[in-house]
Image (cartoon, rainbow, N blue to C red):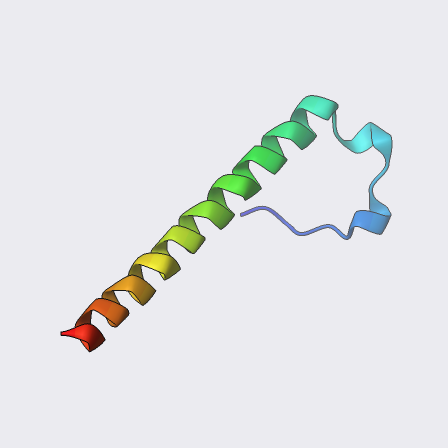
Length: 51
């Protein structure tokens, strides 16, 4: 498991631009997946309510 490190303790030497881009991509994927899951649940709820 990855240990959380406060941003204030990081320096430019701690990660590369490529690392940062990878983290940003992963974060975007995680957010998108969770958003889609929530939206599908909301839509199903609205469909059930309409029926």
